[in-house]
Image 1 (cartoon, rainbow, N blue to C red):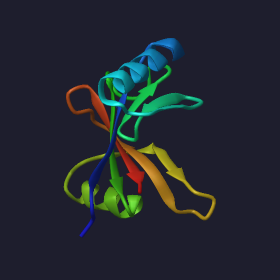
Image 2: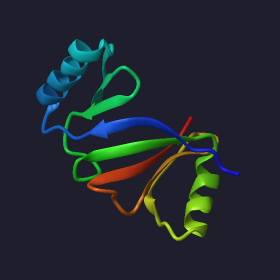
Image 3: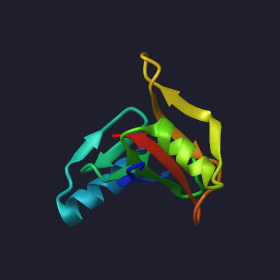
Image 4: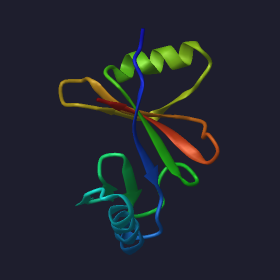
Length: 114
């Protein structure tokens, strides 16, 4: 059986300034430590704010799983479509990320190896 857990919530921002402002707000509200990155910033480990509009109308919900390839097979066997062009692999050939084709209420679903 494939395991799934909530990895983080990704929120789209219009630019780097808005992204940083948002994570600093989460830090002020909840004490989530700010971690600045290249394409996004994090507030703690559970809130990612993209520095530009990314996948999903509003952002993405990252679902962690130990085996992304098995998760893709599981979801596809139950009628959910994986965006083949979104699959990412480690140098050893292990799949470590993929997106589903459909959004849920404006959020892309991002499978992520944990």
